[in-house]
Length: 303
Length: 303
Image (tube, rainbow over all chains, first blue to last red; front, side):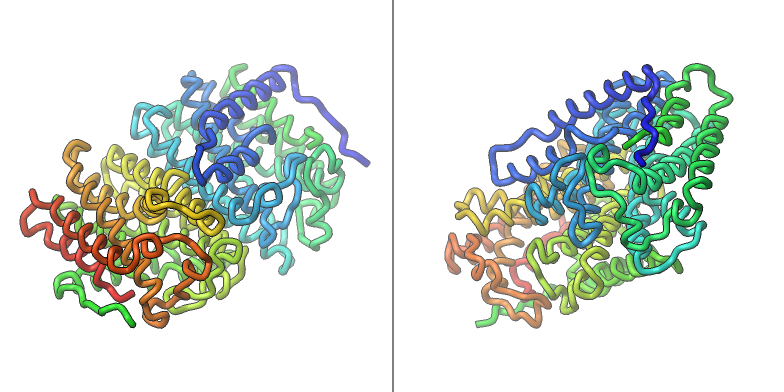
């Protein structure tokens, strides 16, 4: 049975389209193919980075930054930096030695379209580019803001964030994790970068750390809801819509939210987390409607 | 015939030992093995990062920073960040899909001691940690300095620096590069990070960009001399001393400085570059002797 498809609100859909077009345009400029022996490296980065993906992380930077009237170009540059990290992680995760996935966003994964060496280097280059973009004064004139963005993103992507979570995920095939461990794994693997996107919006908005409590709560619950929805889609989803192989966790015998909670409780848990995420935004008015729509969307999406 | 062994000056040897001990101590603290499913990830990072290597890049940060009376801990933290990038690049370069090397620093390379997935992630984590260290106020209180260090290192390691050079190097097995192309390849692959180390010392010393011309000239010539010496060692060196497989370029039919220039002209060129590097330091007094010694050492070393 396919998951119940659910369209995002018209406002969110328009915002998602706008962000997707903006991110593609930015990657197009950033990754111009040079006329030298690095051409395939750039082609591989373009293949992985352009024309696919929900652009959830740039959307979150954007929606959070909007709360505080941040310049759109600053938010766009920050969003593309976060997306560089996300894309690099997908390239490396898809490698044969890792999750060994041949398809991504309905296209051959990068090591399939090019080769493994080029894919490894394309990932490494996008990783470095993320930090190069954030360190650039064009992203924000104030070095305090830039260095805080850099601290935020490096923490979220390293051994205590995304990459550490991916390491735990690889172990999950060999050991049977319990619910707290799966929750921690997912909070690191997917949650950390989602949280970093919301945090980046707040940093650009010069919200002091004390003022970020509600946004952090929103991001934490959103990240977890997103992952539970992902686990459900992995079992119930349509491979064609997803553009990648599904049901791999089940086949590998990995514990997931779904295997540990069962479908009904997993759905219930995701719904509860969405409500909770939205509740964290109670102090904001209609200017936070986009963030609320995003929370509803992550559990209702069909891919 | 083995290359003529040549000991570094007593002062340089003492400085190298001190930096090596300091870097190992810093990695030991940074990479404490957690009691969770990421333990092997940290063990892999320790395996790759500790107890091996000349620590040339931290030594250069240190020696340059000393010219300007920079706090030793700031220079040490910056040095370990640069070494994180260097070590990550070695882990990824050694992978089967890349240079396929089984030995490094006289030990099994990381994917041999662990597995490929762990090696890829250990590299990715060291990559992120480099930026996390530089973004930390402990590295320097002034965010201007930190963000400049971050810009310097991200540029030097990305597609226009180290990783771009590695991509060109992979192409070198398929195409026959001429001398200007090999020079550019090496300036990116090895030169960029060596230059970033010297630049980082100048940034920590708050030398304005206009005042860095001589140091940049020094770093450029040093990096090239280093690479020519490396090419000579690859042909003439002792595998046991090197702690890795040698003569791989020759067997792969890659053009190098040595294949393009011949041994005598390559040696002559390296010597000339060392003299030129030292000449760039003419405006400095004895406080730059360490940098001068380093330049002499890179072409005289036997591994």
